[in-house]
Each structure stands twice: as structure tokens, then as C-alpha cells.
Length: 118
Image: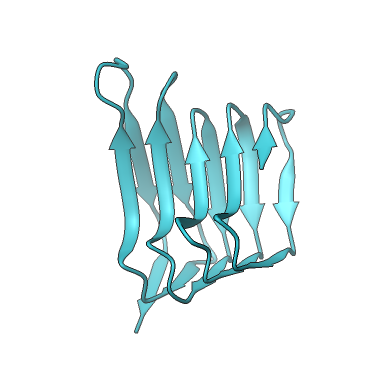
């Protein structure tokens, strides 16, 4: 989990599997998640909360409930799925976008490139 990382931080080249969350980032703006592999994580392979993020070239596979989660809790969340494309092999929910009730926040996603495969 990454909390309040500095601007221009990059999470790159990690392999994660069989965790509750693969990559989880909270309260950060300008962070990039690129070239990571997340497999069979319990809740979500990539979860992004309360910030502005760009994700590219990640591979998500396995039995996770959610491939990529975009959640606004205490502040707005904006995620760009950039190019080169992220690849998601079947999960229950490919991309979840959620603003928590009563928080007065919004979650949004800009899809430039995304590959979904069985």
C-alpha cells in the first residue's frame, strides 16, 4: 500500500499475487502505475483511492473480484488508463468506479487504451 506519495512517483515492475490487494494507492496526485503484474489478489489487483493517477502497461490476471478499482472516499479520484494499454484477463468486475455515499466526492476514469481478454 502506498499512502500520500510525492508527485511524480512511479510504481514500476512489480509482481504481486495472492494478497488482499495487489497495488493499493491512497491520497496521491500525479502517481503513475506502470509495467506491473497482479494475479489472484483477493479483493482488487489495482485499487486507486482519492487522487489523480495514470496507469499503463499493467497486466491483471486470475480470480480477483475486481481488476482495477477507482474509488472516491475523502476526495475526488481521476484515473487515466493510458497507452500502452493495460491488459485485464477475466476478473469478476473489470473496472469498478465508485464514489462512497455521503462523501460529496466523485470518481472518474479516462480510457485511452484497455485490453480485456478471457
